[in-house]
Length: 216
Image (cartoon, rainbow, N blue to C red):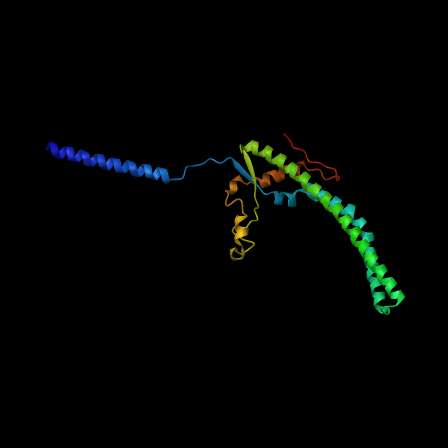
């Protein structure tokens, strides 16, 4: 009888040990819950829908469109000169003189156009640089309010983030797939609309020199 009891206790002990081992193994393989303090923001969407950026882009357009008009007029006149050249006899002194004149004018037009476009591009870049600075300020302020310690930039139109892809998966290359830095995120941590609302509320569109402020 004593031997049977001892044997039973040993079996029970082995069973408990095996059960505990299984629990330990399951605990070891189960994912550890992580409390995220990360927020995500779509900078591209903000740049597109922010009134401040739209106002400065409109001001830039109004500033440079008149400057491009003379170049456009010169280009149109050059086309007329070229049509006249086509009616002239090749090889004559008049033909050569006009041909050389057209070549010089074309080069001058291209140079002036390139210089002006560079100036416009530099000012447009300044718009986005200023905008990004203010987005960063407002993102930091809002993140602190919700307890986030990190804000990551995402593209909410990315075919990996939405269920209505712009590009069929079959057309994506390995390089394009690998370029996605954020594989997945919970939509609840997307604070783009909240920050955009703050920025639009703070934006002043009265002049090109307007600057939004971060309210506290």
